[in-house]
Image (cartoon, rainbow, N blue to C red):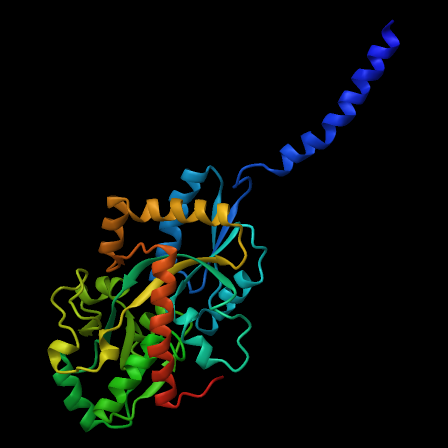
Length: 328
């Protein structure tokens, strides 16, 4: 009497094995640590956004979130790594708009396609750039610098966070407007640009207003102008380029810092990440922290991000071509 029952139980157990395996394979995202690749050196605005969001994302998702700085080639090193990562939501990129636009024209063999290799999450913040002079330069305003540039034509230098980046384009536009003959000194991120300004190895440097703020207030560098249509809350005393008579549209632009994932990341995973990251950016406390660093919350939707990305690309790539900047 017991043998048929035993046989039926055995068959039932075997039949349940695939169901158990399926249940394990469909574990809700996330079930392991997430890595955020920051495409610039530690200490700058890009790194600050990655770590501020990463710390809170870890709490919300219940998993460790590790920030990994991969600086170099105007963000291309970090972007390439993420473009080649598994599209499973466990590797994200925090990068500047430069990496997703300008690099297309600045590298002969770019190892990623910013228009095809990433899934849009959000443009997190906008970061107005400040044009600062080293403390030894006898200037307080752009008018002072105009006079100095005329006197020392060919002897001055300007630093930016990478070849072909918005800082480079703005610096070169200023160079040509003033006919200053300045030499460009590219760096791997904005923090090294500030180091060059502090050590007085460059005349001018372009960095985020947030990074420059403490050094400006301490008198270690001199902020001459802010890029963008409005003054920055971080340095409200510093006039815009337009206020000082520089009306080229390029000086109205501002850097944005964005989150993207590898292309083909599953829609449910991408939606979860987008919801959680945008929830963090909508937190008033996070907004306060960002504003203290001179960063303005954007918190765009993926569709808004894509539309903005393509519109800006059309303008910036044309300007790079007009300048005749050669790809590396």
